[in-house]
Amino acid sequence: MNQPQRDLTRITLAVLFIGGLLVAAFWVLQPFLAALVWATMIVVSTWPLMRRAQARLWGRRWLAVSAMMLGLLLVFILPLALAIWTIAEHAGDIAALGKRLVNFQWPHAPDWLGNIPLIGDRIVITWETFAIKGARELSMQAEPYLGELTRWFLSEVGSVGLMFVQFLLTLVLSAILYADGEAWAGWMLRFGKRLANQHGENAIVLAGQAIRGVAMGIVVTALAQSVLGGIGLALAGVPFATVLTAVMFIFCIAQLGPVLVMLPAVGWLFWSDSTGWGTFLLVWTVIVGTMDNFLRPYLIKQGADLPLLLIFAGVIGGLFAFGLLGLFVGPVVLAVAYTLLDAWIKDGRSDEASTKV
Image (cartoon, rainbow, N blue to C red):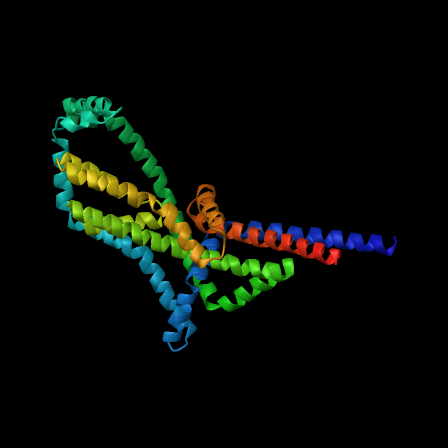
């Protein structure tokens, strides 16, 4: 066997060995991948905050890491504790509301409802059907569906424990990344440079900017939607507007949107014969519920130097492809792909220019 053949065999075996190691490593890390990705996104997006905390805590990294862990715990546990406390405080009101719903007499359809173009007559017929049957008969008809819903809920309760384990694992991995973040960042930069020279390093830097931009876009958009939604609820006279605003903020962070809170409030206003305020809140719900489609990509662009269309495609496409995690993964993948492709095109142009010269 001559020298070129031995070199080809050695290279082939090395590639197969490294590929096998990567597949085995991925297999071993598969149960931790979701928590690892979430921890990476959290640490990258909040790294400047951790550095400022370290500067204020006498330069002690372990104090800054402890403060960040406490902050993450409060972010996740405080809303849950607030919801439980609110339910416990208003348990009597909730029980009284349940009794009123059982004996609730559905009012007749208002006159203006039939004047709605195209669908007014159908809405009036459906409304009168509910009014004739009453709450008790409707609850009897809905009983089979409630049973199915209960069985589905009980089947999903088992996943709560798994989510809690993933949450704890995310916190542990976040603490590890916080404690030695510079070393991990340097390793990623060296990996990118080894993979595609300077272009790979630039892609890693742009991916970090995209993660921070997405985090800023999500938080600021959720804050804007929940505050504007809460103002609309307060102006319309909806009770518990402060609590509903907090719930809206949680829903917006989870990308469920404020509509799940505001739309029932609209229905409550119409049932209370507050037609004017109900119409106002309905229009306000449409405005607040759709503003994230434009505000979030704009805010992400402020944090990452990427085309707005690319960011919009990454956010929406990632959300549909990977769920909530896709809000981060989508823009990051497109940012890296865009950087490498743009560098490849520019290198081709420079080669053509040098050939002509």
